[in-house]
Length: 231
Length: 296
Image (cartoon, rainbow over the protein chains, first blue to last red):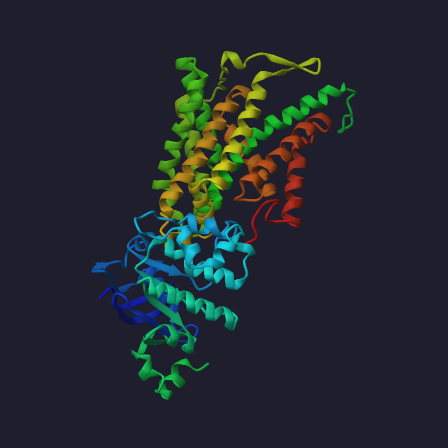
């Protein structure tokens, strides 16, 4: 297994948010964490990324326990993160947003390679983060962690709040990333979007996993969809 | 007796007051830039910045006393303050990042008392003076009068440090990393930036600036135990005016406050300090983030 999350319990202050989450992901796999707002998707991703340390349970990445590490150490082991609210560095240009995190390795991602793969960013390279549209920011937010040469990418609701056309563009972008051999863990509440990207999923609600399996089976299960996913 | 004096003075004297204002700018800027940089990244308002300036000044006094070499102090004293700064960040302030901000304020305020008393123990209560290098002594003729060479040197140093800092933050990769991390620490960390190490670097840079001011300002004043908190209030007004976290703001704030104080002395010597605080209040009401502060 590339990533194994084993029975983690995460708290924010006194609130018991994650109540025993377990999931796993094999190298090259694309999986999705599906659930409504407040179900615990972001907290699961934030626990894996090291922003908040679980009180118990373990998170193992490529055989190493990362549950007590700082985010930058986790990133340097090969996990990339795309935050929910995009969070582009507002005063830096598109090019600088990429360059500040560049880690030069042989055959790794460079600013040039990012521009070749996502040509729209090249046209915006001198624009500062705060002057990008929501869709442009999202494209940059998805492309940016590639500069750290991740083997696994965590995406927190990349389709949220975007126009359908932009959602389509983001979807294509994620397919590019998968094609480049990067494994993906996606958190989503948009089931259609999730099914177009991932093959297998976990349904999360109130900080617990309630169902797991392939989307082929899941899309037939009206009861589960109605109970955990319908708005 | 009127509070406002309109002296009949020759025109070139105004120019001298303008130059005095620029010399003030340097000292405010070096202190305010450190405050602003540290606050921008670490979110810590370091009241002890003024005490770091004091360490720089006293150490410069000692080193000049031993070696008679002012230039040596320009290199050595700021680094002594850097070492103090690194120890303070690593072993004291670091423990307060995740707790209530009141503890940070109490801690840096407590540091002022500890540093001042330590200096009192080492150098006593008497005033000390520092002599500048021979080449910086004397006056140069401007507009038929004379102006101290040292003040010009002091001003040029301040402006050079501003330009260097601006270039560092805006044109170098490491500077841009600091800007990025200051705007979103958590995200910067998730993108592989070692934020704790950046904290040490920026705190050390702030300490270096305070130490440099200690050396540069030494020859202009009597070095005494009150100098730290006197200047920290002025620097506080500068960062409120310019905007916390902005180096350009710290410089423009220093320019404005420097001139206000220089001409305040000329026209309203009784109340010259008041203008600075009135301006600070106006800014706090009208534009709380300061002239160059980022929207939060």
